[in-house]
Length: 145
Length: 445
Image 1 (cartoon, rainbow over the protein chains, first blue to last red):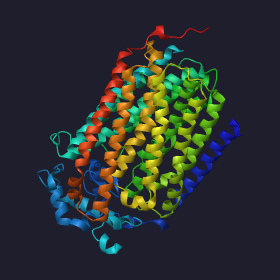
Image 2: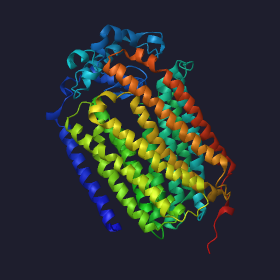
Image 3: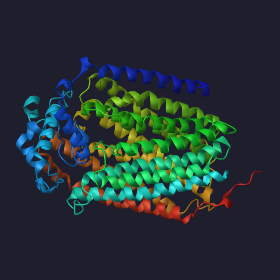
Image 4: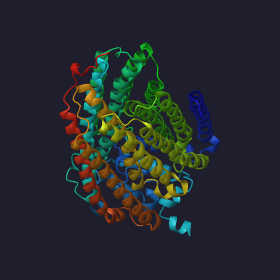
């Protein structure tokens, strides 16, 4: 039967080994050669867009890369799905946008802020998501068939 | 209680109860908004309610864990806390940071990063607060007459939880990188070091409530926390399947996530077996309900539902849907909320001297809150699965799907009402116990 000493060795040893593997995999998957995000295309404008995204806690309703609050649509492929004009109109709207009755906060963004957000969404839309992009893309049906 | 300084735990538990009520209130705001009753949208839009709901969850659980530590460590170390005054300073500063953060969320003072919405300037205050807490706990342990495995595992969990808060404070330009390191905090907390805290509290409660030999219980504690880290660390990979990083995580995350239920299964078997082995003499039956309940419900919520959701072939469809909310609610409830309610139920009669061990109100609180939470989980689950099929498979528009599934939120709010009634009964029991008293101090024979 397992002794307390052996149980402690199992805990400490198992933790150390898996932690080292975890760090190794992190370094590997975040290395430049494994990049799937096209980080070379991450412009100043897109970064400003990300800051606006965070400042307004858009993730508190929407999802992006599948992460958020499931109250409002997934925005990973929003430019492909809706087009720039529609997205800009929503962001700049002076009154709450409410498709099918569910209200969005009226952010009344300036044109330049809205352009920054578009740049952010465009960069997000080009990330290789290991197949998830096909699930949330409007073209998914044709691609799957 | 055995040490006067343990009394400080009561006030952490009281803060927990207050924040829990607020958390539930904001949950209702969200539930009603999903049905279409969003009259508060102007003042409390959904993203505010959501940030308050999840952050209050974290803060009330942390307050509960801290209270648990202030209660358990003196007893395990056989020593008074090194400074009761500083413990009260830490309590007040925790409450102040929490209140500023919650008010700030209503005025766009936040960071839009799921679960980590507290803005960075406040993050530094959190760090100072946690360092003060750890200082008190670790010094008490260091100066104590004995160092038990239970105390060490609990303290290790609290220490790692503090350290793991730091990656969440890093700033990245890339959403993928941001997300990657955000999960270092959130996942490695809830599916890693928080389980150490849970294991430590569970072990303490089982030693006290079942009377089984400490050596036996602590041996299995090592095995369980070993299984937790063995599966949980690499299980972080299930958050990396579809956020724009290498496919290696689909393989590694898939395998190790499948192993994660083992730790919870071991915990459930461990708790039930220790109960069966024990003398069953302890009069505090309510604490026993919550303790064994926590081990079992966490296996279902965190273990089984987590497993179902993180199989890569399923997750490609369920990722970013209400299925996550289904798993999240029962997992947090079983693993962390119930263990905090267990330690409160155990500690309260000892702190106040009122031995209200087996009241019908206490039992009603247990059953109503649990049945309510299971009902909420089912409602989220049905809504989530319907969402997956309609939106992800049938390619229906998001809002059309939301309108189709809004009926499940009527069920959700109904079950949440039952759940809340249970929690109100629990809090009534808490209030009935009164405040801690020196008369409750056990005299040493």
